[in-house]
Amino acid sequence: MKIFVTSVGSFLLGIAASALAAYLVWQEYYPNSTEVWTASSELTLGNGATIPGGTEFIVDKYMPEGFVRLSLYVNVEGEPLQRFRKRTESARLLKIPYWVDP
Image (cartoon, one colour):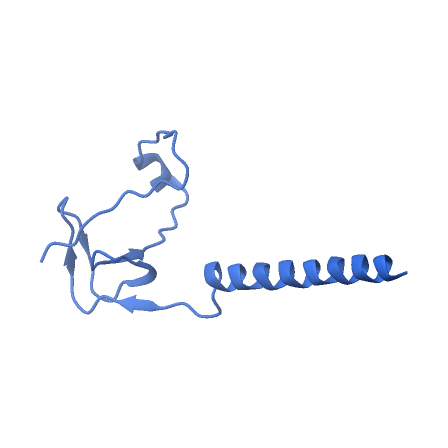
């Protein structure tokens, strides 16, 4: 009987520890709030593209090198879809960074 109680207790403790670990990981990758930055003036990127003032960005990650990675989502539908050249890269979670000129 003692072995059975110990086994069940260990099993339940393992479930509780796994649930706690899963919760902590979930909170790290899917936080309850999102930091949003709004450009106060026009931004010029390194490739010459401009982003108008008032554009909102989502903070993706604070980098240890001292910069912040922001996300901008662009929805495109209809005829403008034909203005894009499309390709497939063999990389997971690909990021193509553009730097804002000072």
